[in-house]
Image (cartoon, rainbow, N blue to C red; front, side):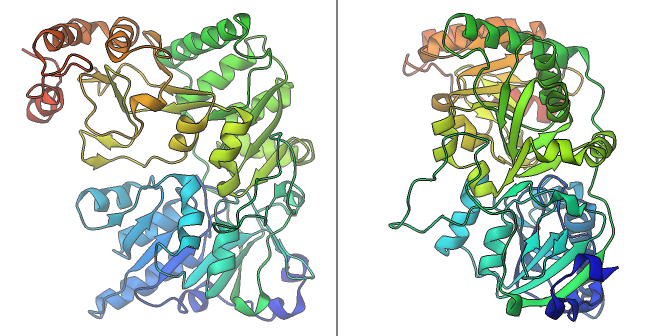
Length: 505
């Protein structure tokens, strides 16, 4: 019943249908929506908006919007709007196949920026004003404050800056989430900024709810629909080997005294390899670990439940159906061990550096000198986006990038002479790990790095070719500091485009 979820009498009177709420959004608007990695996104209004757009197009009318979110969302949002050609611009991170197809066809403008930059760039006025915000909540309290759901993302900024607000109250989201969030309202614009008053990842410096001027809330829509829950693939042998190399390295760092016995706060990207690393940590003997990250996935819930992980700080969830059920069944247990923050705090460079986070992220490819491409296939086709990896790579205590050494049944080498797109320069990369081994690049010159990467990370099918390229580059390149043969540096990528394999001959 709405009375149980909407306790503010005035806002209860603004309950309407998703179609009526979506009709408030006009062509050309900049619309900011909640959502982060498939959690906490609006479920009904985007689909109703897609229907309005489709009908407008059928009448020959132009109707597209600019869409801002926290990160990726789900088919009900990105997918629905992309399918009807309803998006003119999208930022800052996406993973929807339909949206990706339109981006790579040049039909949809995409702004791929660091997640920690999104809220502040909007505050700085770098983009259009936010016309409408559509934000999912679990409940509206008597004073009009909003109980966040399974992600926080940029919702605070959207609610603060939007001219008009539409709230979706999702009855599927547990009201018992109240108390898990820490919404910090102490940020300011330069030159009035002050230090973030937090020295531990489990500290609370804000409030448990979001606030919004009730006069700005034009519509409230009731929903009852689950988050996107995507199962993870079983951990394969390559992922296990990658996890093994990394955990051995971390244990070595502890033994050398460069890391404390409980490491430093962990940040982990989303995917099967990070899940394998988290599972390996659970069996490693390490204890009293901490996590300061943007996303909690299955492996972190397992570590919290086993007691290996003391707490986890995040801005959203990316859980499989089974893990989501575990979370909901034991919400009281997890609420005391998980802190959910705005992404401008979960990814804030100041906090990442102060806490000394260990960043563990995936990559598409790495080159001999440690430059990382985490976003583009063959240099020009976007996959998802940089997400928060750059926030942690540049500012963390350790920046670690993980990948299998080959892709596409061995036709692509993840270790190449020169990356076809640079997201993280060699200056921000400390460790590269594949199933073949681990290259510790700290304190090494470019040529020393290349020898480590070839010896420890390259697949045997490509190792000799990489060594041959490097040897000839050392002999024939224009400069000998970072040796490259410019006519050949990207020839592996062109070979794959021409023949379907990077292997020569």
